[in-house]
Length: 200
Image (cartoon, rainbow, N blue to C red; front, side, top):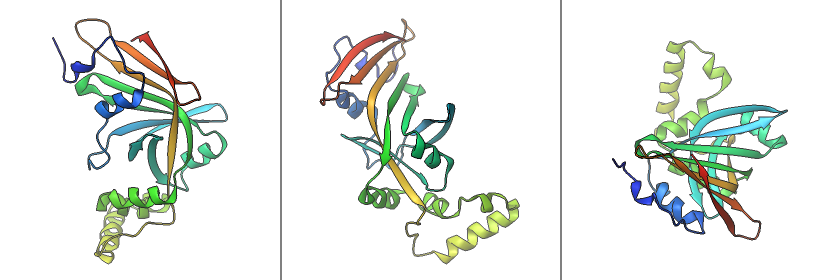
């Protein structure tokens, strides 16, 4: 039995994990962005939430959020994070450990422009105050805001984003015909990576 994507169930893994990312992740111009889990820690207490992988490049992985969010406060004191992307239809999982840093301004602008109109509006209205409104009032306010911005949404001042520079990448591949297996890449600090195989 084989699963979609089994072509990379291999014994010889590339020295550069970015070659695998080209196979595993969609290009940045694909409007359907992968959903991932972002794990943070503050005061020794772990926290996690799902969000979109906005972009990725040779530097790392980008995500975006509201500057007033809890995750932003956590990252200010403890920027070490983990990301997890799960592809159940292909029996794959990618885990990233790294350090988050603020994304550059040009990337923030590009990422906001690439968002759907719904997500652009959400960036403006997804507040605690809005969440506290009754459903009928939230629908009314949402519709009114959308109608008032028929020409499009500008980037709100609370829009922010982060680049996660990876220190470790773990590629998990499942196979119903045998045990699953992980391939772990660890950054050595000089642009190279060590590679080792792990039990699944």
